[in-house]
Image (cartoon, rainbow, N blue to C red):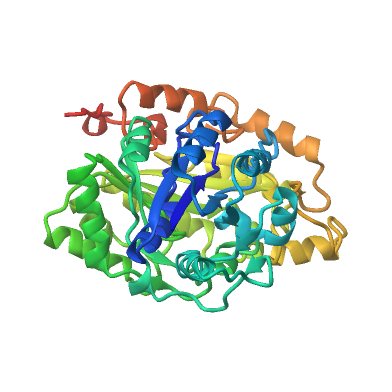
Length: 456
């Protein structure tokens, strides 16, 4: 049985992201003995004609489509991605009678409405590795689920999370856009941020992959694919139980040194751990600060205060690690006073770059959605496929936009709107620079000059 997996992602800013989830499902299917083919819509210039040719060439029995994101969560420059997936389904229908199965993190956030919108046959909610293999096994026998949305309450164990099957042709495209490849070390999130869908998608228990397998992936990427930069895709790399250190120690034990970055929670970090991570190649740290005042941090469900953000940033800086922070204004509890306090805090945060968002995209089944219902911002039965953004009651949207524009205009390390420099970063990637590149916005001393990646 032949299975074609399609990545429908069309987002390329600030840089294209390798379709890791799709590749992990591909690995599970290959391990189960199926003939698996991958097609990346972005790699193929979003060409429906090329997709049609691929379908005719393969003649698949099942086609899976991965939806990574619904939109770009940027109120000031909205971009929506569902229409691209719908056009893919429409093209598939013109070419074949193969069953079409939708999956991916974007789909799982609001599966019923997306499945209805796209007109696919089935959808897999949550982790797709085991469910897609089960679907294929049954399809081979002519058996199909009664319900279009296929759900499982069980999460696969960390040791059962497969290594991705990194397609060489697809990887080549992404390496030309920054030499960066994605690796996952764990799933699940124990935190309770009111806006976040990670616990809904991955569960609230940490499930760690075997560190040896993680480092095997990195070794393969470095030697087979010539990857020069690793991005750990975990929702939070520095988990509270310290399991991330198992990965770092395994890197050190095996002599793996490669530039890498990850998302960090700005607490629980000390100088010793940062030094250890730097020995394996840690180059940059992205911080999930999210709010810039103690009041809004608490309302978002954060367990730290702004002073913790400052301390964590100082520790990374003292070790020569570049940092980026992400902030949202308009959070629950936001007032004009907290806006001005947050602006002051961000501007005065030293040696870092900060990306500032206005409003928070409301997602189903989150605490923020429940708050928005209570406050009459959305209705209980409202479908949130069309983006709705939360801005605290009492904060005028236009005032907030004008205030943020005035405050951050001309400040190089404070980026508002958050996509302001996307085009410049893409241009630098084309010149051969590696990584996320926002670290180039940070004022550097002589010890921390930018280095252009070589392709040798």
